[in-house]
Image (cartoon, rainbow, N blue to C red):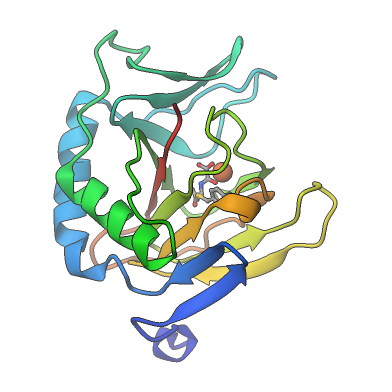
Length: 214
Ligand code: MD3
Ligand code: FE
């Protein structure tokens, strides 16, 4: 398929719920800065496959930056101010991440957004993220801002019970999604990423998930 036809035009918005929307191409002007920042972060805090409390190894490779990082091991999920692999604090949150998150949140109706955690997820073709809620944060109202980079993906946007119907939302390189308030606790996931080569990222999708945790 020709993705010129599939893509949403830049600067348009798709409403997903009363307090959830996709800002198409919102991150494109700063993509090069974001990718340079990610390169630097992964030198100090390499991507790794975390183990779930149930003993499964996650398909998505993860790292973090900012004051708190999301971690999983046999003991459970938590936010940790240090990288458990190195004992060091997570790399600092880049200014470009903070600015993009605040600008996107503002455009979606959440002024003054200041996230204190950024989970960086890396997908290769075939990798998926099963339907879940984000419930490890103290703040369950503040928005979550997600920035999609590289290969496209289909996002699943559900309801407040796992069994609720989901809608499929295509996400492209540079798209930013904002979800907060009444939509904050919706179930969501990512379908297996399709094979492909992105001109900047090759056979990878990277997603930044910015959150206010504390
Ligand atoms: C919808 N990551 O890491 S954030 C995650 O593409 C995660 O890697 C997604 O879900 C990814 O937990 C992108 C998507 C997200 C986050 C919070 C939500 C979607 C949401 C809250 C309510 C509804
Ligand atoms: Fe999530």
